[in-house]
Image (cartoon, rainbow, N blue to C red; front, side, top):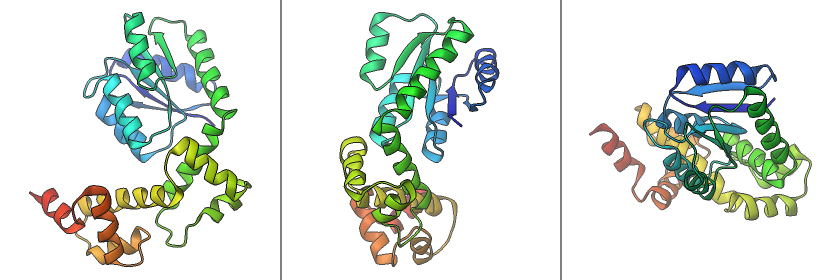
Length: 231
């Protein structure tokens, strides 16, 4: 089942669109502003984001750029009340797959989503997304290795390496470390657990490995990060 996120503060538009898309048996969720949309995208996997160019909290172009920076591979359909060629070009350059006017007929909108999903499923990019999602969801396993992806998706090690290189843009180990650090950050922000316990829950062998990886990605130690969060 395809998973779709609608990022739009217009309750009438988003509600109507949600009902229409659910008729296709797609799993649909709604974010009320840009920042909420980014939280959804960081925590869950979505095949398609339907993004209001004028989304409050964080504008559409800002969200697209943030998705690229964070390595979020969700396909994006940008909507606008009054689209222009200039706006469309900006959105496509920022990573959107489609740009449509909000007044488009419901049937035509559904057809666009179907087209985006079909292109996605026929592309190695789609499988790369699935590999990336698998790593994110299993990053706490200390024993996770590329062979686990080969076994789960029934593909060769060389193909896994190729997908990471061409579509994720980083090696398996670096991507795994990134997700472990993101998990560690959430635990540091939301709990008072000792760092060695957080390290264990995030797939690191010990606190030292957590500290080393954390500093390499965030530029500070996890201890200092906790102090900043509490300030």
